[in-house]
Length: 221
Length: 234
Image (cartoon, rainbow over all chains, first blue to last red; front, side):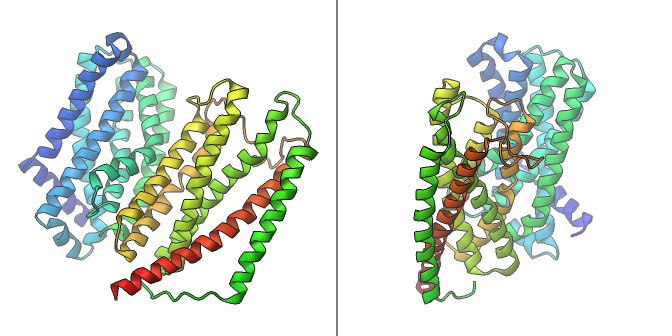
């Protein structure tokens, strides 16, 4: 597996997303709707609490990432592009890493839009902006390995749309807990907490990236 | 996938019968120790006796999922159908015992904590582990091709085992209502009363023999299913 092939797969995915951005639009719209619904359902005072706002944001991000990843694989299955990638030398190995990288870039855009919407609509005060940026960045990179691996496992299976959240969300629990607590800590000015949760996010991000790189090629159908 | 021939060697049947008899005897002894020999707890009274089924259930859940992991690694390495049969059998047993652990824990929580369920790290991580392995069985049930199903399940069996240490250590890592581990502790010094510990160890051993008995029966059933599916394909 070469870095060149991984970048090739990721760049091809991002070009396809730019040409037909239905996955990105669905993910951003979904996140925006959830943020708006949150303040309506729980009331503005509760919605503005850092712990609640952070948890809702990361749950929205995980669903948005699943939506974007599923659309990316659907697009490849529709035009048989995935088979073309798989027959390339080293294509099977590069597929997991390339897809995860492209998904991280897409999720970063969704996080930027969703984060800005949360800050404006919920009037959230950010005590530690750099810490918040660090937690968000690590969160953005911690979600894709699990989601891409689970989509690969459910590829070409009936009921895939239902299966992927069932498989991915329980595995994402530590990442979601760390990202939510880290974000809340950065919002409230707890630098030690934000860094500690960032460390956990990094650890789980690396763990699942390594597992995905090792097992992903075997799982691809 | 290699063709599997089903044979029931006489020693295999004898071993299973032996395990069946041993598990009945061990469970009978362990039940007597747990109900009549071990003392009542100073704080919880007779309620403590649920410990003797709750902890062995949790132990079997851990053991089952570690066996799923080992069999999954073995399957990806060798592609032997027997290892896939071991993985699915252990996963089913693990899901059953995780479910029982949750139910028994809930029954124990009512008189001690005053609630059937509370949002507490050990309970949540155990419930999450239960859902994860239900997902594992779901993936298997939706795949029709034997080899693809086994490979998918093996990958998932390796990924999901990460949750086992999370469940066990959740009470140490986070502020928890659930008590800290009393037997499998980092310093290897159990905090239980000696007679309670004896009854618990005997019960855990009895449950482990029961697991071995159920596994041998379930693996044989799975191998027969694999052989039928292969025969239908040819």
